[in-house]
Length: 119
Image (cartoon, rainbow, N blue to C red):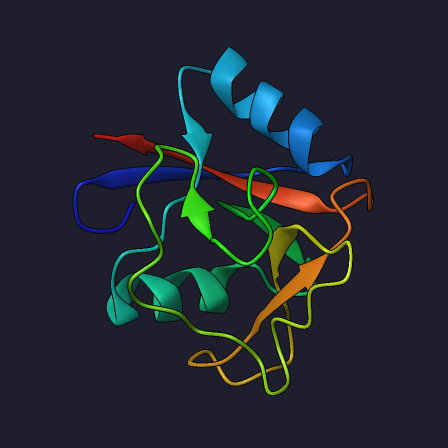
């Protein structure tokens, strides 16, 4: 738990869409990161599991939106990211600086995910 949110780290891997479906089946959604403190917290708990977050540009290439429809305002991209080219979903990477560990990758990659629900 961080601030007013509860998080679930998946134990299995699947696509971004399936990860989101799993979160929604649990009454949550993929995580929306809206502060540096939350970004650092999540980066510290994923350990060795690169994980989907609730950010994509699937609807309009280059226009990054969270799963609730809000536009991206604060970003923590890794160096050289996003590099687009059919990479529409965002993963929180491991072994990177917490202030720059997002990477855009194809949405059908099989990765862990992070669900968020307001406490």
